[in-house]
Image (cartoon, rainbow, N blue to C red; front, side):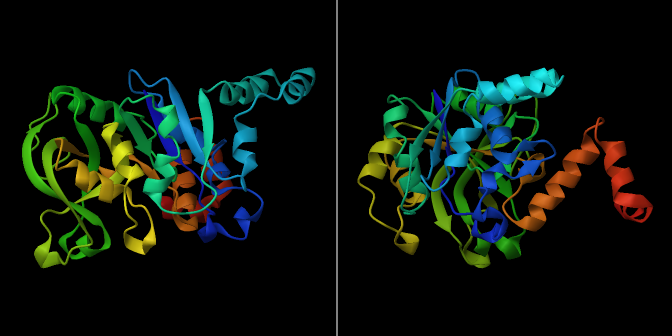
Length: 301
């Protein structure tokens, strides 16, 4: 089984920083964002490779995941073997690349990886959001197994007055993760999806659950994407193909806590994630607070 990470976007919200360095390579502490996503994608049992949908305008991403024996040797010669090991670790991850050079939507990006999935179910992980504990996709795979290999999406509750900003699922709660007693829109609840509604009015929303950016999808989605007409923004939308899939196959949703993950999609969010990760890492916390200064540390509590 493969996991697909779309990463062909220009990262315009981070300009001018992303003029020369893709946003996916912006560091969180000491690793780029995309490495966290790759490591998360490889966590579920059965996932043996990650396909990054890149742009030829961003060769740095492929360079990052490539072996650089000369650089590693130089580090070791300078007594930096631990650093060399970490560099090699990144280049040893089972990552391959396909390309989307014209931005035609998330569905079009996913479709570029069709030859890589070998007709099997596949994960899709959006590249600007990662889960440090790496268990969200693991739980999604568990739900899929419980329901005969059905597609599963991760969803999270949003306040009623904000549903018009998101794609919202329709359906009903049909159970929960083993070991929990979650119901309704509580974390751990499992819903059977009957529809996907894009940015509904609050009074018309079928639920308050929006798609978080983690998908485990049937290979049939690839066939549907191949014939998908352009939708919103004149782009090939993944949700449009998923809506068509609902007419043929069952789909489920796992309610998650969005705070379980880290959103790095804007400069402010990326900065906040760095602070969060530093505070949660025992090896970084004291140095971070010292660097932040007494006044800043006091603000953080």
